[in-house]
Amino acid sequence: MSTRTIGRIVGALFLLAFVVYIAGGALAGAEPQATDTLSTVADDQTRLSVGALLMLVNSAVVIGIGVLTLPVLRPHGEISAYAYLAGRTVEAVVLAVGIVFLLLLGPLAQEYVHATGDTSVLSALGRIAKEGNRYCYQIAMISAGVVGMLFCRVLFRARLVPRFMAVWGLVGYAVFLAGMILDVLGYGVGVFLAVPGGLFEVALGALLIVKGFATGQGRDRDGLAGDPPPTATASLAPHIA
Image (cartoon, rainbow, N blue to C red; front, top):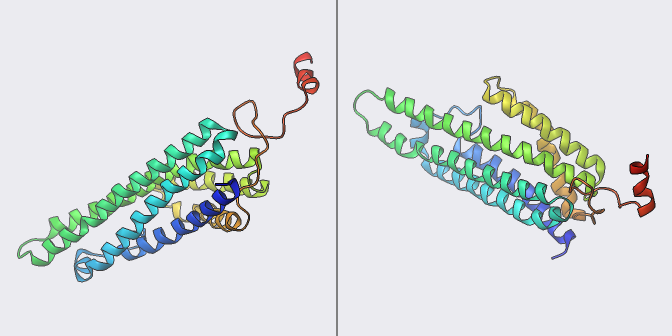
């Protein structure tokens, strides 16, 4: 499979991951602003189940992106390529754990509906389940932010995409990472700081679908791709100096 073909598939997967996770989160009530109660969940458990399945599709797609980009990134930075795959795998697994927390709302909702006594404990467990999902999301996104910066650095040095796009990604992922860390610390600004990185992934997905990855430009001394290596005479000049 050619590099351009892989790029087009990866671009489609970026857009697919974006769509299915947002749609799944909205259906399952996993969004930060969601206020679904156990009684609401009990009224429509199908919505919760469908949303959770869509979110699981996102986890599979995320791993697929890491696997497909490995042979593209590896010639330009082996450590970064494997780190990206590992980071996307961590992201997918932690998100899946968060989905389990959401699915626990189903049986809790049934117990809540059929309970005849005090339901405060069940309500508290429901809130804990949603908080568990939220923390899993934040940890997964911290992993995505870290390896996303490595990914964009390789894209920049290897010129696999236009350099302005790679710079956008570097800045977007850095801001996104800061937002997720601040969220964990309780400042609640992650949603706003996720905008540059989210728009980058949409733009990158569209670009890759149209053009795929460009041909890389070689490997630099750090194991990351860069400009074509200089001639032997030129490469000696800095050492002589």
